Picture 1 (cartoon, rainbow, N blue to C red):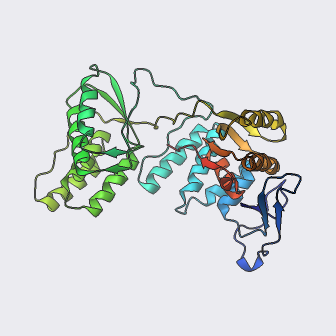
Picture 2 (picture 1 turned 120 degrees about the vertical axis):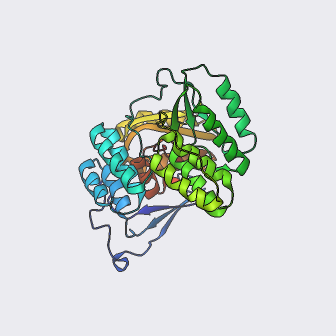
Picture 3 (picture 1 turned 135 degrees about the horizontal axis):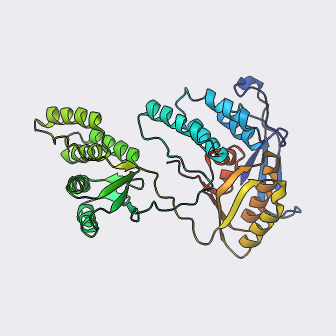
Length: 368
């Protein structure tokens, strides 16, 4: 396995412009092989390469890792005019870690206007996931909505007491067929006649999925019906009426009519549960974390699959990344698989820049 390392001072990021011309980049240098005959005995190839022209995303990740949040913030703000949502996600998480809720909410408004979708919802990283008072357990819709979905949802709705609050989570839905779309549309229509209070998460993802089906299967009414029902559910009257006009023109039928009912509240998707058998890192991972890293290695010793919960990690210090990589390589060399999950966008981009995503499966926290 070849792991790239950048030729630079690991105690600070390269402060040169991230937009250097390719001709100024040093060519790759030699390989260093750690094989069975080496002291490490890991059988892993470490490839040291010349520094490539780093993107501004890379630079921002390294500035933040080097405890320069102000410089990272300035760089990320300068990237918001582009279409790379990674910069937005990193800035959202920078504000979350710093507890800057007002700046987060301002950025959320700009995000919603720019991308015409629901923005992330503020939740401090230090907060543990919890149910809102009076809210039932989130109803997470399956990855595929098919002809069985409508009946199951109707059964669940019938079991709820009047006045209850139900959270519908669309964030896991990856596919929907015509029968599933029609079943959900019918179910949402029935909820308007109940006294249920509705919370919705994953709205933007289900809207995008339905739009893609409408483009590929424009003659299938069920996708239009479900999208109209979703717009009604969310109180998006302008979008509803625009789509209703298109529906009438396309199918030469009268579309559903807008109803003045209380819109559902858009909320963050429920946090994915970490495996019970996971080692949790937290705070800033730096030279001061030696004991915690040693405990991680002890935790990993008897296991073949090592899962590390990074959801409470605020930053991985740039000067410490090399040591952290060394520990992961040691685990990898002993035949273990590694998963790092729950990390914020800033840490996740650092993992990518430093090649940690080649050593471990990395699953960043979902920005919702």
